[in-house]
Amino acid sequence: MKKILLVITIVGTALFASSGEGLIKAKCATCHTLEIPKAEMMPSFKAPPMDAVMFHMKDVISDESEMKAFILDYVYNPDASKSVCESHKVQKFGVMPSLKGKVSEKELESISEYMIATYPRAKFVSTIREILRNDKMRGLVNSPFLMNNAGLPHMTKLLIENWDKAKLGLSDDQKSKLLVVRKNTMGGIKKLKGKINELENEIAEDMMDREDINTLDEKIEEVAKMKIEATKIHLKCIADTTTILSDKQVTYLLPFW
Image (cartoon, rainbow, N blue to C red; front, side, top):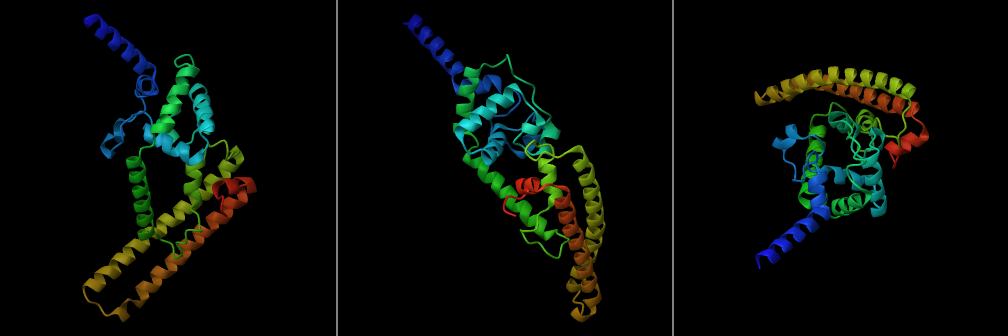
């Protein structure tokens, strides 16, 4: 009986080790945490959590066979330009080392099937969507712009996310020009934002002190003027950026424009 139980245990262990779940724990979990990530875990991450990897992958690729092909290619021939994650995340974690010779195609097939079926989990997706909603609200509250229409894209943010993507295909000359646009844009906005925040806080304090609203006209008009100036900088950034990019690149960044 003991021998039978031992054989069953050995067989069961071997089957688990060769399954998608067993393989992903053995081959991937050293760098990509398989837990649902929490804020306090972030400093210890060597690479994006598996939930995050698949969240981004499924956002970019919808066909399951294409996902499997992508995983096989990226694991064997990793490159920043192929990544489905934002470019600044790739810069933070670096490009993963090739696992060619360390994991077979058959094993990758099982791993990819398990990844696609399991990740991202609903709780992670819900948390990410809540974070994105909160970020959007904070952005509106702290915005220095007179116009916050969703149809006016923040080009510098989009470019940071896609900077090294092969599909965007920025040339060195384009990157050089875009960095100048970013420097001028961020410098101008930062300067105005500080002044706007300071003046808006003064107006809020005046209202708490029950100042006569008519005495605030000058400050309110000054805030409006600065927001107009900031909005013009924003619009100029969009115009300058889209002039540097090709029509195909603009369509990639702004598919509904």
